[in-house]
Length: 115
Image (cartoon, one colour):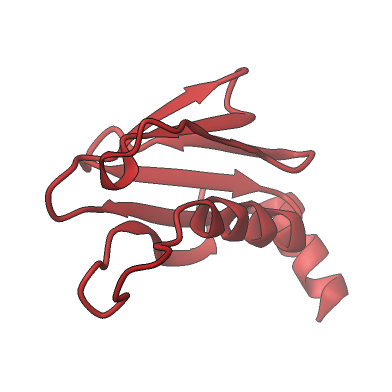
């Protein structure tokens, strides 16, 4: 399956769609360094800026059609999924009831990018 994923990645590219989910404080995502870094601001109203660097060969961009959506694309499925996981893990709710505070960045869809 690794060999098949390598062929799929080179031919089609892998894409993870991630949604910014918030109840009150809007999460602000800024893409810097030509799509290799994401800065997440105002998570739960905190002043701290979360900076997530993408792994090599992975690019991130904002979706043009959908509000509050990030697109993580790359040729290697392992690096692409790990980059999406790094973004998700950067916005974990601490010291609060996670059943109530559902804010964060979540993967909404993933698969190959048909070109």
